[in-house]
Image 1 (cartoon, rainbow, N blue to C red):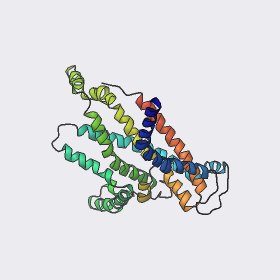
Image 2 (image 1 turned 30 degrees about the horizontal axis):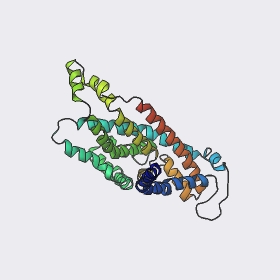
Image 3 (image 1 turned 180 degrees about the vertical axis):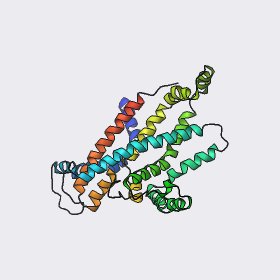
Image 4 (image 1 turned 90 degrees about the vertical axis):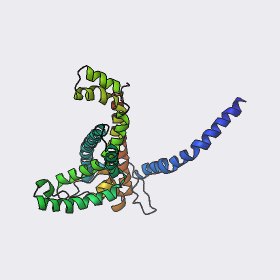
Length: 293
């Protein structure tokens, strides 16, 4: 009787979880294991000749100046983009949880950029930076619009930050709004009666209670910023002079343009370890700050 019940439970789990688990193994686990294997070879990605190279690829990538430069750019971009995107998303959420007549329309408007694909978004903003800004700058003579947005190392960096924040802030806004509406009004009302200012209520009541949303939003923005590829490819192509080449773009070029698939997968493996480590530390630290009302 007990064995039949146990077998029935296993069968139910196999029916409901089996297809998804099989898809996970085929689509995620198998390519990851194969990539780990290729990172120890000199395979060019095309031929049938695969030579085992040991740790040579891992030694080479640490002397690859462009890879190290791409890593430095990606870390700088991630730090700035995470701060800017979360700050804008949180401020928008604060504004759109107030009693505004047009808040539903504004929520839709701010969320819309998130539904546009990164490649298309990059081409749209490339036109805006090159043609739109120069036209506005010519008519108004405002220096901001006359900057060489995609022709200079510094302005190209900020161009990527602007577009990334423009695309991602609306998505984070939705998460922050869902968390803000669950903050008990009684706590804020009691603090207001006790004489707490708006900033004190925000710092001591609202922010601690929305920390679960902060954990999620930081995790999303950190992982997405580290993995930025499509926006980088379509907006700057890593230029000028490879100054805005992200790690993901560097790996793509190494594997599929330089036909050094083994070295490319070795870079990808190191990149995976770094992103997983940073994301894990961030989740651990921010979850420790979470409190319950």
